[in-house]
Length: 500
Ligand code: FAD
Image 1 (cartoon, rainbow, N blue to C red):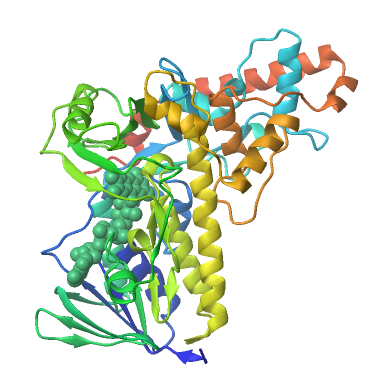
Image 2: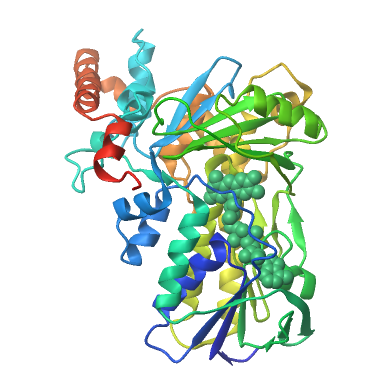
């Protein structure tokens, strides 16, 4: 491929992916002559779920000049300090994966080694006692993190539980105000060519639309990237066996927690996402082990509020498109792949895709090198997220169903196997490039599943046991005191960002 100039971009799809892309690219190309059109079909609608996020989302909208509290008010959002995993390790167990650190690193040695050494002397404190994020969440409290934390002990982050359709609307307002043209019509036919890729889109209003670059945000079906260009899909269901979900909104009972709940069931898991005005619920399951009726019954049994509509049903295959950028089409969102929403990563992968598009288009053109680099990075990003999600299944110690035993017995992808072995054997936290989840997140999952290193770093033996004990006690006290003075999550929302 020679250099291909871009004067016109068409985004296909107006879900979360389409409007986030339109908003950010309208900013990126503001001072150029590049025009952006977005085509969506209100007759088809959007996937309509996707309410839990990770902190990167806040950085995304901050770059558009939007303020946390304004976004929360507009999207009826609550604050998310992490995810509480119930019954995953064994029935009756629970732990929180926070967006934050545990304790304080010293002398280049990770905190977990100090904690393990202390435990070896008979101390019973939990790793979670050293995390401000976990302790705020456990008590459903919330404070905004200090922009200049005095020590690692005060480092935590937060994200939003929000109404995704309201967020898409916010993105749409931004994009349209910055010159994006919106067309509400259904694409009925696509003309494609083996060399260039997509040539024209034929709409049901009679319009024929052509562009130099197409961004496919058409959802699971991948209208351009798959149906027109037959790019292919890498299937990861040998590791991630859940292939269906049922989702329903309900009334919310009691105060909103400052975390998402993920509760394991017989052959899958259920999410509970609190918003200001309601709760989102869903059951992700493996259809080889559970029927749709059974999945709905389980969801009903574990939802306390009143259901606001009949449950919506989804089918999917975990995996990714073989090339996220093929010829003149870039897939963003569900059209580029799907990983179950266990760690709320879909919207984050939309953000990273948009970031890569911006990096590729420093000028109004692209080359084969841009395409290859984009595809390489996307493959790595998806694989690293996939591996993190697999870890949750692999480490389970449930014995109540064949599903969980099958998960435990699975053979891990090579890179993940290497990483898990390094942690088990020597407490080493390998970090690969392009990882959305860093070492503290891996520690949270290992610890939550009681999967700890065989030995701690022996250099700590040089430290006096009394000194170590006192230092860690001080850390626990500092965390407890910060939590004591924090307001409840409900109070925080009432004061700062309650929807009118
Ligand atoms: P869609 O929302 O499906 O949008 C597709 C768009 O394409 C629509 O506007 C549609 O009208 C348009 N379109 C399609 N065909 C045509 C046509 N022929 N002509 C014109 N327009 C067309 N993500 C998270 O980050 N956190 C979560 O908690 C989370 N939970 C999820 C739970 C479930 C059960 C599922 C299935 C997904 C979840 N996700 C979650 C993923 C998240 O919902 C998606 O990543 C996000 O909504 C983006 O979707 P999209 O915009 O790619 O696709």
